[in-house]
Every structure is written in structure tokens, then in C-alpha cells.
Length: 98
Image (tube, rainbow, N blue to C red; front, side):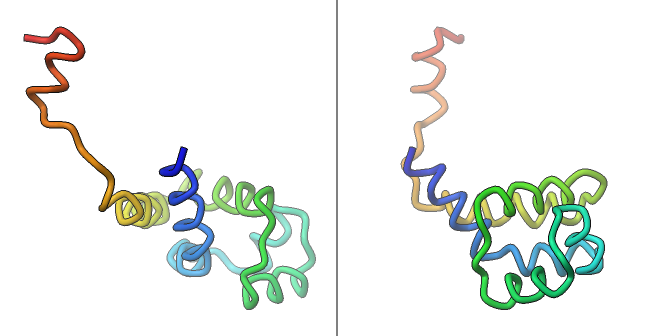
């Protein structure tokens, strides 16, 4: 559960960068998520997005845009860099793989 929280924070903390990488204009994203351009600009500056707004933004950004998906994956990987890992041999034992 903690990793989900870390991933959410990584996305929230880097959403402006993801928006910039996407190449989409603020007006376009604002319209797609149901905000005015002015309200979107203020939220972008302050970073006070609701979880629903973040979800809508990520949905808009990731559908046709591989660059954004890659940047999002990098942020998720960074958020997991200190997570505990399991050796492949242990994983194979757990799943009964040979």
C-alpha cells in the first residue's frame, strides 16, 4: 500500500513536468478535464490538484503520447528505488517455477 502512496506522490509532484513533456497546450488539457483555462493555470502553478483531476490529466496525457508514458514510468521507478526486492531464485521457488 505504501508503494501506491509513493507513486501517487511522485505523479503529483511531477505533474507539471509531465504536462510540459506531453506537448499539449494548457487550454486543451483544461477543456478535456472540465476546467477553465484560468483555473487550470492557477492549479498548475500552485500544484493543488484533486486526485480526480490528476487522474483525468494522466488519462489525457497518456492515451496517445508515448513520451509522457515514459516520463511517468521513470517517476514511478524513482519512487520505488528504495523498495525491497526479491531475488529471482526466491521468486521462482514461491511460484514453483523451474
